[in-house]
Amino acid sequence: MTIEDYKSIIRPMMGERRYNHCVNVSAEAVRLAEKYGADVEKAAIAGILHDITKEVDFEKQLQIIQSGDIILTDVEKKAKKLWHAISGSVYIQKELNIFDEDIINAIRYHTTARAGMSLLEKVIFLADFTSAERDYPDVDVIRAKTEISLEEGMLYGIRFTLNKLLSIDGCLSIDAVEAYNEILLNR
Image (cartoon, rainbow, N blue to C red; front, side):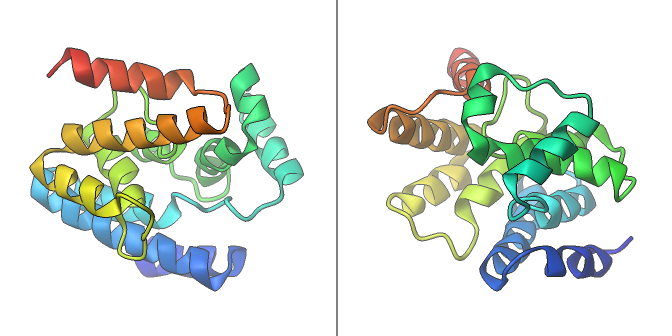
């Protein structure tokens, strides 16, 4: 399938704002892949599909997750905002016949990160954080750090997310903490 095919699949699954975000993430993922040497085609695909189930209701997302034989951790059960990444990784396998582990993992961990991330996974994580329409506080800082290195961007992005969760007494993803620690330890 082509990127245009994937666009036609996701278009009816989401509103205009989310669709534009996916298009922007795909474009930024391609740019970052070219800059850092990741597979450009995989970056485009993972970028366009990363939020494929974001606007699917939680009950259906849970059904998709369960159909993939995934058992949610206690944190994941409570943090429903993480479900779209997990359900999306299952959905692309079951409905789109995408079995490339790198694309699957890039979608699965685009919200939390994880230890042992591939180059593509880092590209998608950061493309989601820095896509053209993003305008949250500090977006220019993470964009600048991402231009220095993927690891600098990752550290800032994970720290930003963890600080936000801590400020609202939110549960912290173990995957995010392990990713952060791994990057720090390997600096």
